[in-house]
Every structure is written in C-alpha cells, then in structure tokens.
Image (cartoon, rainbow, N blue to C red):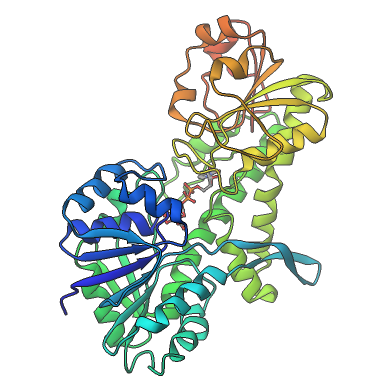
Length: 438
Ligand code: SAJ
C-alpha cells in the first residue's frame, strides 16, 4: 500500500526524527504535539531538542513541503503514536518487600483517544512508545474499538518499538533492524510496508506482544549488565583493584563484554523500562528488580566516594561537571548526576553545577552556573559526572590556572590520572581502589 499521508503523535526525541524522515522520503506528514511551544518552534524551522543531524533533517522536511506541525490531528492513512511512557511520580507498587515504580500510560491513552474521530477502515495505527507487555492488545485496541471498528479486521494495528540510541538517532533510525509486531500478520505486513519507506535495516515481522517484549528485554539486559559493572566497581574498591583495568582485561575473553560502571543509570529508557516487567509480574522479576536497585543506589556510592576524598562533606564546595544522563546529549531526564547533586547538598556540601549542553536548564534546588570557569573558580573539588567529550579533553594545566581545587573525583574514568597528578591534583576515580600506576 502507498501511504500518502500520516499523522505522528508526539514530537519528541523519537516522533520528530521519525516525522522528518518520512517527510523527506515523500510522505505527507502531520506532526502533532500537545505542546504549543513545540509546534511554534517547528513551524519557524527550529527544533526544541538537541540531536546531531536532526536540525538539518527537519529543515529538509519543511523545505520539501511535506511536513507541518499542529496541535490537532487530521484524517490520514496511518497514525503513529510516539509519546512518552514515564513512571508515575507519586505512586508505587509493593510485592513481597519489593517496592516498584508504576508506568504512567496516560499519554498513550490520550493519543489513542485522539485518533478515534479520524479512524477509518483500512487505516494503520502504530504504537512506538515503550510500553508494558500486552499494551497494544489490552489497552490500545480496546480504546480504538470505541470507534466501532475492530483492530486486525477493519483497520491494522501494530507495535513497533523505537530502538535508536540518543546521539545516534538519525543513523540508527535508518540502519537498525526494525521489529514490527502486528495484531495480525496482515497488520505486521502493512506496518513493514510503512517503515520500508526509509528503513534500510532488516524489517522483521512478528506479533505485537513479542515486539513489546523484545524492546523491554533489550533495555533490561543493558540495565542488568550495567548493574553488574557497578557492583564490580564497588568490589574493586574494596579489594584494591582498578576496575577499569580489570574490565579491559576480562573483555579480552571472547565471550565477555562487561559494560562501564558510572554514577548510575539515567535517561528515559533504561532506568524506566525494566520497571514495566516488574510491575507486570513482580513474582517473576527478582533479578531485574535487584539490578534496578543497584543502579538506583549508585549515586549514594558516588557521594560516599566524595566524602572520603574530601574528608567530610559539610561546608565543602564542589563543582559538579555534567548533568546530562550520558555523554554528549542535552537530555537531563532521570539523570543520576542530579541525584548526586541533591544528595551532596543534603549532606551539607555547596554544589555548583555546569552542563554545557543545557546551560540554562532550570532544575529546582540546583545552582546551575553559566560556564566552566564559574563552576570551578572557588571550589574544593571537581566532580566529573558525565564523560562529555569536552570534559574528557580538558587541558589540566588550563583548569589548574582557573581553580583552587586540588581534589578530583572522576565517576566515569574520563580523565587521564597521570596528567592531573603531575600537576598536583589528588585524583579519585570510581572503581579504583589503589593508586594508579603503583
Ligand atoms: N551507562 C552506564 N554504563 C554503560 C553504558 C551506559 O552507566 O556501560 C549509563 C549511561 O551513562 C546512561 C544510561 O546508562 O545513564 C543509559 O545509556 P545508554 O547509552 O545505555 O542507553 P540510552 O538510554 O541512551 O538508549 C537505550 C538504548 N538501548 C540499548 O542500547 C539496549 C537504545 O538503543 C534505545 O532505543 C533507547 O534506550 C530507548 O529509547 O529505549
């Protein structure tokens, strides 16, 4: 089938790249978002998020005449739901001593409801948002059935997870394999036809619930693997080992690939998605639950490290470098760095935070400064929380000239210890329980 027009609901990190990609491949795209500011920004040809290559793609999309943004839907051949599925801030679930977070599906529900007046026979509806198992068949299909049309019979319904890595979205959107889970094989085929518009990776058709599980399994596996790296870092400190050296040696084994420890796991994906499994089946997910707990407690481990390095935290001044959830992105969602800053302040430290990718971020309770110089000027220690390239490339001599701090706490192994040590800095690296080089 040829798709003439599609509506994409949700113009965030996934919806906007996807919308512009379809538009530059000849499909007429209406991008819909509830946020008027987002719509105004896009219709001016600007973008509201930072992602390499996105600005150029959106510009091409607008120039092609195929893309416009609005707050209201219109009739279309296909509807794609790409809205956030965070967890609920104020509620949690309990099972056998486990306290777990609950998915907030309200944006998916509203998006599905917004399609109702426009749904016609023969349409395709795709859910891309990461969702708990069975969301497509148990939540979305019944909402859409209120139109009087049945999924798999009158219209096609598909779950197709986005699996792109922030920072690499534009390339991965095209090159990654795409899993398309239909409520019927015909739905899956129709979904495959849609994404074949721009996807160069393999298109793999399956059923909707399998596709949901695939997505959650991927991110859960990564979370568990990061948790074990974080636990190895704790063990290495206990046993006087440099975990980074130990990991690189272990990874020479042909079947081992240990990930990197750090200040914790952030972002809207890996720190959230495993909870969808725990919520759906707490009695089956003790390992997944434990991994989440290890990663969520990693900021506390960083704070203890800072306490040791500084001989106490009360009244100490600390420059926190990096608040994004990972290197070279501007996304601060679920960032472990902000958690570290809050915990340090709770212990009486005074923290100045510098985030080069979002210098004007407004984070309640956090003192954001507007330059690196301002952050490091009058502090006792520099705390590296994110391995942004520009932090990794800092020139130690230049930093020395701008700060009176002589203590460095590096949670991401971003700084070459020797260079800093030779200039008189005292360097403490997460996961390193010995003096490097000794
Ligand atoms: N992290 C570590 N150690 C590591 C790797 C990552 O501590 O070795 C931390 C990062 O600093 C960050 C968090 O984990 O705080 C997550 O970062 P990430 O780069 O692992 O993943 P995301 O959240 O940016 O993107 C993930 C990707 N999933 C997988 O790699 C399995 C991406 O492909 C998904 O599309 C995305 O989640 C998503 O949207 O679900």
